[in-house]
Amino acid sequence: MDVVALRTLTVTVTGHTKITIKLKRIVVIGASSSSNSINRKFARYAANLISLKKEIIELDLREYEMSIYSEDLQHLSGIPKKAFDFKREISNSDALVISLAEHNGSYTAAFKNIYDWISVIEADIWCSKPILLLSTSTGARGGKTVLESAHNRFSINYKFKIPFFSLPNFNNNFDSDEGIIDIRLNQDFQAVLIDFEKIINES
Image (cartoon, rainbow, N blue to C red; front, side, top):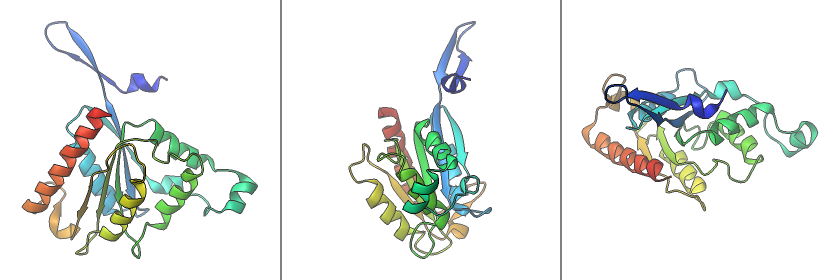
């Protein structure tokens, strides 16, 4: 089936006049393998707030578990199909929302392993797609260490500016119905989201 055909919306404007709107395909990655990942919740929340006609595709890292990357394994067995599947979802997207969980100051093992595998498919790891980079945790720093590390790494010679935002103290500052409940944090987040939407529209 034609992927493009699945990404269109036909609406009636006046009378029998119909127009077809191409939906933006937003791929959401909560960079944790936890079944209760707050970063998956935060990434999904952010994607839903994007004020564009869109479809949201969420990539669950648990569905892309692979052997730990090594050059020896790559030479022996090649690149796993799941790495190509993950990469294909990125390639077929119009934009990415990635929210990073932090384990001991760095990426989770689940995300790092996928990142390592897809990085050997081609140099342009994120397929030059607009990226919104997020992090959150239950602590006061909100995953800032891994967020800053990823932002510095992903931004090197990247086609687009990468907006980023960290939400501290998730359990106190986020409500499943209301979203970000701290007024100042919400204002900062909304500004980052507007910046991201502009980048998508100009891409």
